[in-house]
Image 1 (cartoon, rainbow, N blue to C red):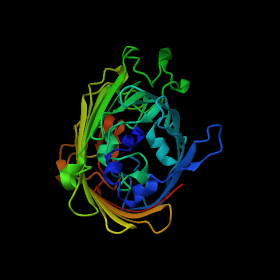
Image 2 (image 1 turned 180 degrees about the horizontal axis):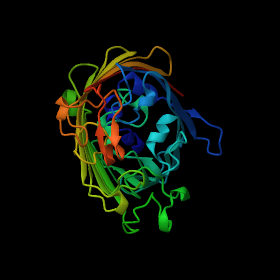
Image 3 (image 1 turned 120 degrees about the vertical axis):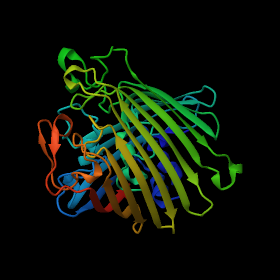
Image 4 (image 1 turned 45 degrees about the horizontal axis):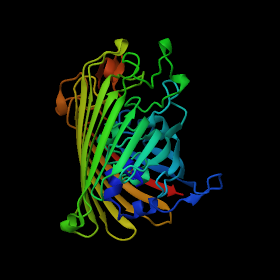
Length: 429
């Protein structure tokens, strides 16, 4: 079983008939190496972004979005993947390396504090092993994608170009060991242990802080034996369930020390539940995803702060109109704790995203997307709700420490709505 398909989330499962995913599953090119079955694949992701209206100093803070991306042309990321997948033998072995370059690599955050502007990240790098227990346990040892989530880090595998708020609050990359087991065609699960819930890769000496402790570890202040634990399960509807056949229900949890030094940390818990649901309408698939994040009251001295939490729920729909034309929609609602929030900005946001994809060129994903983010809650420290100061547009002027450290005062032209129009082109090789 190639369990790595789990790590791209339910979006890939639910869109298996869509042209974009069909192209992503094409056989990669072989590479001349000592291991003849090594393959090379990847993509180049570019976009043209337009923040409709005046001022883009404050934009919706979902993952990979920033003021620097608005009103201009962008290279988002380059992904280069080398892989020797597991074969069908009982004691199969292989590996996978995903190297990400470009501005999005910095946001992935796998490098230690102080090294966040390298435009490079190791997204995955693990040894894959199989042990012949029952149907076979597949192992990943090293750096691997989080087993939680509907959306993927890789843009081509998502139904929309922009990421959801649920994806934003999920763990992305972990360093540890993950075992997966396929009970039957209907039931699969995984369990694993990692250093922390954070993306910083273990073993990097540049991440050492006072006393020789690594920010990629749980100590200090936790004991050196304190680790992060995870589990996930996927249930697939059987063939005799009519049009629901192949629909998938998915759930998972990750709990452990957050790691990191430049942002508040502590014991963190991420919960995820989602489903992809087939419909009786040919070409139409739907989905739902719920994410919950909790960060306990910080016990790390100088970085102390109150307990933080965030919730996100999103609904998805994808329709394959023709072989080349597909339409994708997402509606979401995000809300979080008033103080020490997970995402800087309003503590409640609603968003609608519509994406039209037309694959005119071979190996190219080309799409147009319009997104509307609407402020529904307060700005951290200003209890005026959606009827009060707007967050988007004119930059905020803070009094001491920014969004999380002081009381931000909004500019006179702050807006409650942000509209983003994007043209996205991705070449996959």
